[in-house]
Amino acid sequence: MTLTPLTLPSPPLTPTTEPTGGLPSARAPFIHDLPGDLYETLFSIPAGTRGILKYKIPSCCANIEGPNAIAVLSDNSFLISDLLGRRLLKYDREGRLQQTIKLDELGIGYVRDMRIKGDEIFLLETAYQNFRVLRLTLDGKLIASEKIPFEFPVDAQKPENTLKGGLTGIALDCEERIILEATGGSKLFPLSEVQKQSDPDLITQGLLCNDKRFFVCTPGQWKDPKVTAGKTIYQTKLSEGLGGLQFLDVFEDGSIYLLRDDVMPINPIKVDQTVHYIDEKGGVQGVARVPLSEFYYPIMRITAVSPNGEVFALLPRPDSLDIIRLNFYQELEPLIPGAAVPQIAIVQ
Image 1 (cartoon, rainbow, N blue to C red):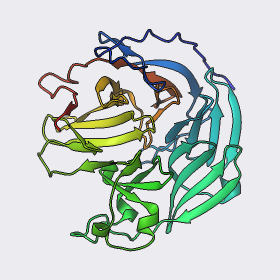
Image 2: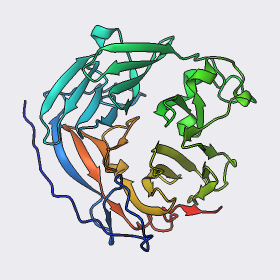
Image 3: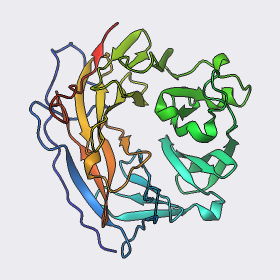
Image 4: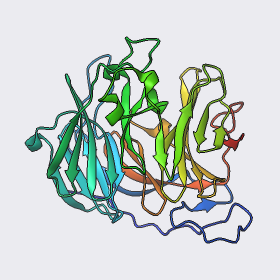
């Protein structure tokens, strides 16, 4: 096994708001004053035909497949879902392989998404006619399996649109509920509610944390996307009205990480994906950009937040899978001239 580890110093933390008199949150990314490099590479795992990780390259009309999800454990090590190898790989910060969990030995098939909560691993499996959320211990023992009613309609007005085609991920809220992310994270259905009844209009969507509900507003096409966090509403403007906002994570200390996608229908199509950090007091503090243009193939769970607030991502290349740390700045320029500035503002 050949790895190319690179140990990087942490950049200094730059305050972005006036002092509030309180202590800063223990979970916060480092925020730079001036824009610079989008990311720093921690280490690379050889991939491709001769690498540790393999890619599936279809002959026609399908996406390349390979490792497709990342999570950060409480000890700041990384868990990577190796789709084709049907295994989970645990790496430390220096790129040393510490553990392999063989999913096929547990009867687990196509893993679409992965989350970590405390000392448990949550996997979303969407194998043929078998949609499940599986709970594992950190050492790979299967704890529980919950079936997902994949015929559940994600839109009451269009019952033909179901979780079978619209389920895009899972989330875990502060109430330890499993949340099904549908239609790119714009709809958040608690699994326990979906299992009880089949009408999406009767389900209160969103994440719960500290007696607050966090959900995505859907004002309609060409309208400015919004999310609600308790009594606060955040909004962004998009270049052509295509894209949206979704929650990457919500934490008990009150901090929030939002994903913003701005789709520009030019030739070729460009997507500006940015991560926005909101502190425990509700202030929008920093923004980082995901380098989508460098990705060899699209990934479902690109980013994950570490216990101390850093955001890491998988970056697949033709001959390696890179683990990168995103750099946060007070602001970023548009991805291309004339595009909307990647900003989020409080509107209420």
